[in-house]
Amino acid sequence: MAHEPGGPGSEAPGSEASGGLEPALGFETLAVHAGAEPDELTGAVSPPIYQTSTYAQDGVGRPRLGFEYARTQNPTRERLERAVAALEGGGHGIAFASGSATTAAIAELAVAGDEVLIGDDVYGGTYRYFERVRRPGGLAATYVNLATGQDALWEALTDRTRLVWFETPTNPLLKLVDIAATAAAVQQRYAGQATRPLVVVDNTFASPALQRPLDLGADIVFHSATKYLAGHSDTVVGVAVTRDAAVADRLHFIQNAAGAVPGPFDCFLVLRGLRTLALRMERHVANAGAVAGFLAARDDIAWVSYPGLAEGRHAHAQAAIAASQMRGAGGMISLVPAAGGRHGRTARDRAIAICEATRLFTLAESLGGVESLIEVPAVMTHASVAGSPLAVPEALIRLSVGIEAAADLIADLAQALDGA
Image 1: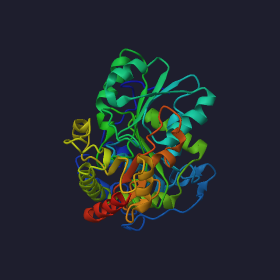
Image 2: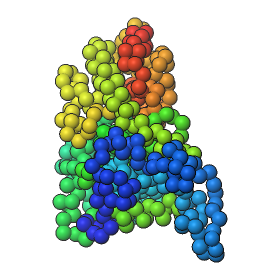
Image 3: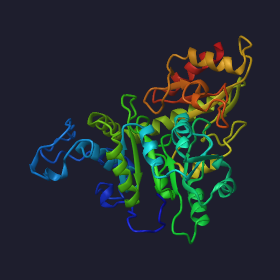
Image 4: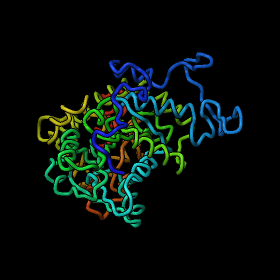
């Protein structure tokens, strides 16, 4: 499905689809209240979990309030969809069983013979899906470094392109893509044509607390809500948001037809997490900034990537973009240790030793929880891209900086680095 620029069905921020809350409310207020309105029946301040598979109908073909079957509709899921839509600036929310299920649903907007243009640094599972699931069925995927400006994008766009898909910050190298400039370039390239590609942004690393891609021209924004939105590493959910009613209708159809929906308790856990999202992100950003500064000052670190580092030998090349389109540089850091250390190890062996020596940073995949995590992407989250043009450095370490005391996190990394 291609987008019809300016066509009917586009919803402005603050529309009824965003939950009916005032668009002028601060993000912190929206995070607490969106989708969490008191229960209509009892006034319960914590909304109920509708743990049901089906609903009694008032007559044949007369479902009560439209509720027929829980794959199709669930009040708890609808609250979550409404909440994330409001936090992303208005539109329609569609929830799925995981971030990967969300990826698969959005990818269904392109069909065999179409092309998807994808940023060249993405989650390994995204690459795996497009290469091993969709490419054999005739959907082409082209990977482009969208962080270098619009020239590479412009050259790669064709009349077959149906989706322009990227993460920013990227995973795991933390490159930045200028969302507004990318969306404008797509608009310009297809000016005067009846359709153009949809701009799809994976906003998982930033969350709407730090970045709202729809406000910058994106057509679809989505999250692995497992990460920062839920924030406690206790559920697996995905959510997409769009202001285009036609696109939303199609995604809702796919949601129901394919059936990859989250259960009501999982939706409740994300809803609960959203209420502290603003506070948590403030702490994630503050802690990551302190940890990045510590790492950048060490001589045994070969490379650090953090969008908030604006000065020094590890200054991020796109720190200005981070400052312009984000409200904080995020809680993710990537680094490569220098070879050598106490035992004269290679950079790769030092990376493994560091990850296995931390005490507060848990060695685990995923990110965005209140606890700090550490991993080696090349053999963990990004094993799927090994041997491909998207392969990541084997000595790369990715940190998800949690909300613990920054001094304790720095001390933990210091002992691990010193011992490696």
